[in-house]
Length: 420
Figure 1 (tube, rainbow, N blue to C red):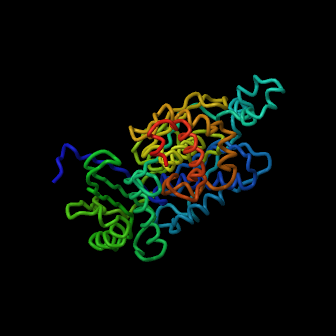
Figure 2 (tube, rainbow, N blue to C red):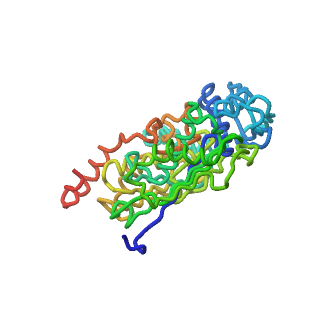
Figure 3 (spheres, helix red, strand yellow):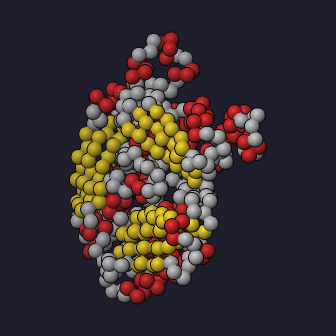
């Protein structure tokens, strides 16, 4: 039995696409996608509020040619998630949809359209290759974090990875009709225990699984518990992580019939920890959904993940945290930091130097490198924005460049051999 003083507990949660906050995210991102489909350079910042029988869409949109039927987009998004019955208290057909959109503030737009650096340049300076991505300024100030860890194949923290797989599995079983009594709203939480530090643990297992799922009135809790243990928990979590002492709490409140926006108000941007790394690392506080990529809350967080994942994929560190910060209206970040938690093959300062040389974190460069002016955002709204190979910020196409540059940096030291 391991010494309890050496045990470390790590907990993360996920929520399903039918959770009211995630439904709000999905609606906001569906609206964003439709604007980008019609006009890739549209500026969009859309928030959604959901409650019993009503959706309210508000925010700022600047578009020259796009004409989006917002009501239609909202209803299609709600239908896609599965709110199709009036007795749920919120549904695609009968719930009211209120829309209050106006143009982006010209004060903000001025700094985004022409960055402070660009405004201070001569025409000759603007024509220089190094200034090609200096036109666009950051849409806001703030700090963003990206993270990667080699504890899972997708280079994500294990607890959030397992929690997302549980909620995704619930949705799959509901939509396939395998467990027809399931309703759209659900949550999952996983506690992982490590005997030792991440990457150097002597033992690793799942201590606790919590699942709360909305269900029909006429199904017993005994049936739900048996089905979810068999079809969800044991189907998702590898057997080596489950022990006789692993605690399973399934619908611990005893009943979950009333759910979705009828049970709790939903709001865009209220699940930022679910969206990212499950609390494993800091969060800058900015939400993602409903925002076009000139908003660095979103695009720079994606880029920071891209950087961190490439560092870990290059085996320059087992864990990597990348922090980047901006001033509104400026193109270049005001700071960039890399932390490897002692796992780096080179120093954290050296890693930051490599990143500064090989990655361009100006907003216009991020948008171009990751091809972000396209309708890909509705797919991000549930089950996490990271660790999913379909998204461009999950590419590991900078591994060779990082390894080569690190090898040159340490060519005279034994560390260089460790990079091979």
